[in-house]
Length: 222
Image (cartoon, rainbow, N blue to C red; front, side, top):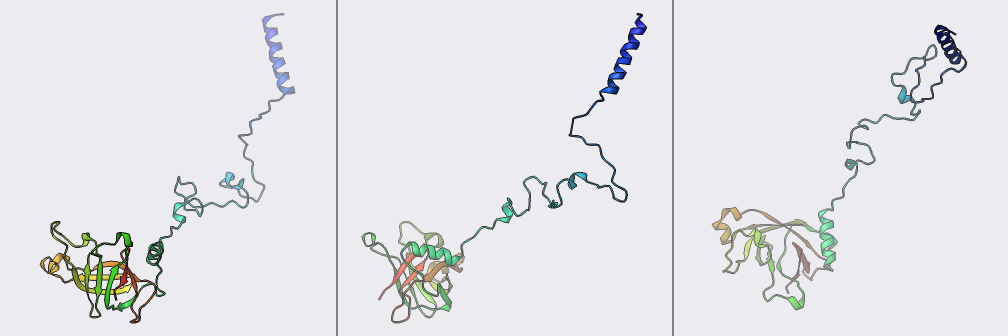
């Protein structure tokens, strides 16, 4: 058989094989788009339709680490900050005390008397801190307030007592100095707020037996 005849038989065999065994594409990653039935519009986003009838497009859902959805977003989780009453109650309870039923002072309430700091008997200082209030709005403090609020002090001299005017409201004791150091340094003449509240119990004069001031417990001095 000639060379041309052999080539003719090979081509014919390929043609018959292709006809008898057609090629089937098993790759399912690609699907040929189909035309919609008459009267139905072509969808602009066919992939969205495959998500089901309940699929919802959430705004910003594809933003990296910036979702504003209800789940997984730090912005959706509220952080509880304790109120001043809760903070004072926790400190007072830790010291074995309890707040009065009012849980604070009345607006513009005045006190009359001296309250001395309560400490462990074995560690009781020789000169305990104290504060004296008068109904005319004046006060005198002794070693009660922190030195950081007093301005410059000399280490080789005992700290002078603080005197001035006070005002009570809620859980706040506001004091304004009028002592000699404040008169010499106008920067010290400013209202300074302290956390204060009456504790449970009143004496015969209707005054609180114990006071809570800046983390310290003071008892009324008879």
